Structure formats: C-alpha cells, structure tokens
Length: 67
Image: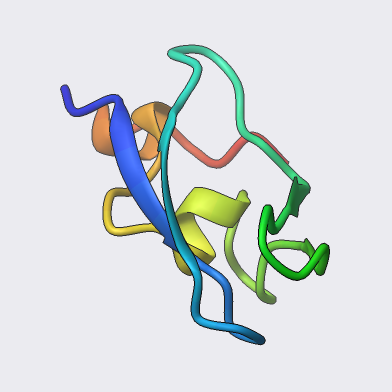
C-alpha cells in the first residue's frame, strides 16, 4: 500500500507530495502555489485519483469509491 501521492495542479503545474488517509477519500485540495481548489474529475472518487501519481488507498485495495 502506497500512502504518498504527488498531486499536480492542472492550473500552475505545481507538484506537492501528500500523505493519504487509509480509510477516506479527499474530495478537495487547495494548491499551495496558486490557491486553486481541486475537485475530483467526473468518474473519480477523490483528488488523488484525478491529479495524483498514486490512487487513494480504498481504490488500491480494490474497494469501491468513497462517493
């Protein structure tokens, strides 16, 4: 199980390594560089699945999305 994911802001392309919770999805993420609030893309359960290098732990474990 990988708990670190690098989120890339689609607006300013800033990258940040974040630690994910084991049992929850993160629906919002505020870019530390430009302040843009990221939300999951349609069909994704969280910002890590949409903008991260590693999907969230529930998806890694084969569970359904946290919607």
